[in-house]
Structures are given as structure tokens and as C-alpha cells.
Image 1 (tube, one colour):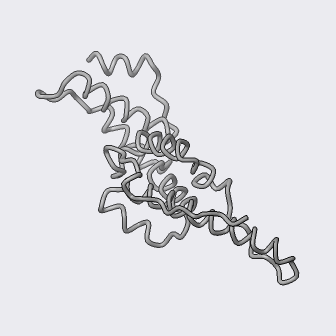
Image 2 (cartoon, rainbow, N blue to C red):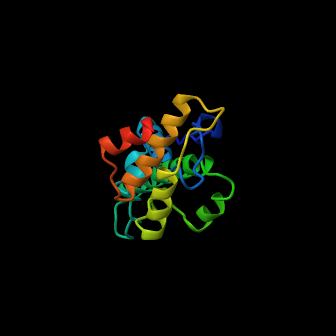
Image 3 (tube, helix red, strand yellow):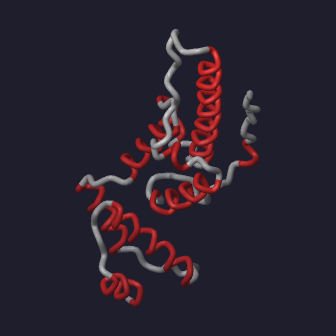
Length: 172
């Protein structure tokens, strides 16, 4: 039985707001994983789903056809996952994706790049958290959301902020 291959339409991709620009990796990542789970692409970006190997010359013809169909299906899903990621990167980040051929490698690169454990980056993120104050025209909801995002960024970098410390920061 032959598979019918459906190409993925860019208009079916879901936009993550804001797109990945550097500091918003935790919230961007959470949304991307939810989208990929919804579209059945999570195993692909996590690297758990890999492309079927090329059939050997000695495989029966029926098996070769099945393997080639599986390869085409994987390629199509990889393109969908790769484009979903690319669609949700800021324009200045998109060129970083050019050197990657599959979605899992691209996702791993972005995770390593923006979920850093570099002490200088942790310090910079900690300073942004510690010195972040509510702006005059900012709503309380926006302020809390931004502070929570900065806290999640630090948590993903291995710098946990206790609930007590976070509550004090929100109230001061």
C-alpha cells in the first residue's frame, strides 16, 4: 500500500508570540513543545524519531518500498518540524538555522545556545531579574509575567529563585 504524502502548509503553522529572540527561551520552548505535541512532531524534534536507514541491496522489493515510504514520511515530518521552528525565530536568529538539516539538531542547538549555563550569562540574567522594576505605563499583569519569565530563564540556567525571594521581589 502506498502512502499519500501531504505537504505541510505554512499557514497551518502556529505563531509563537514573541518569537525566539534570545531571552525568552523558556516561554518560547514551552509553546513550541505544545505545538509540536499537538501536531505529532514532538518525537521528531526531541530526536526520538530517526530516519529509516537506506535499504540494503539484498532486501526484498516489497520491503524496499516500505522503507522508502517511511523515509519520505519522516522527511515530510522533519520539514514540518524544522519549518515550525524556523517560522518562530526572530529574523536575526534565523540565519543560525541554515547549517542544520534536521529539526532535532536545530532544536538541540537552540536549546544549548539559549538555555546557557555560562556563568557570565547567568550573572547577566540574574541582574536583569534583580533590577527589573515596574514601568510607569506597565500593567501589573505585564510586570508579573515579565518577572516570571525572567525567573524561568534563571531556573533553566540552573539558578533557582525561591518562592519567598520571588514574592519579595514582586512586592517591592
